[in-house]
Image (tube, rainbow, N blue to C red; front, side, top):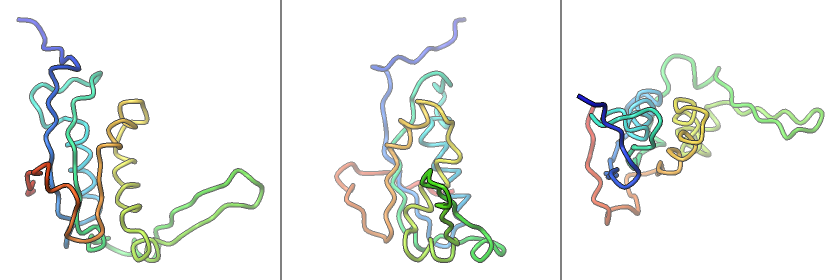
Length: 142
C-alpha cells in the first residue's frame, strides 16, 4: 500500500465558522490553527498546504483566563534605538481584539511558507456579523 500524496489540484477547501463568545482566546486559536493547517483531514500531509478557510466571529467576547488581561503584554520594535513599544492585553482586547486573535493563531502555525499562506485564509470579525455568508461556512462546535 502506498502513501497518499496530495497534489495542489486535489485539495478542496471548506469554510468553517468559529464563535469565540465566552471561550478562551487560546482554545479558539488552537482550533483555528488545526483547521487552517488541515490536520483534521485524513489526507493531511505536512509538506502540502491542505488547510481550510476559517472565519472567527465575536473576537471581542473572547476570554483571557487568570491574570493575563493585566499581566500579558504585546511588544513590538521599530528597529530604532529606544523604540520598543508595549501594549497590555487589557487595552489590546478593547482596541483591537481581531489583532489579538490573529496574533494567537499566528503563534500556533509554523514559521514557514505554509504557515504564512495558511494565515491568509483566516478572517477575524469583532462582532457576530461577517461578510462571508455567501461561502456558507459550517459552524464548528468544540
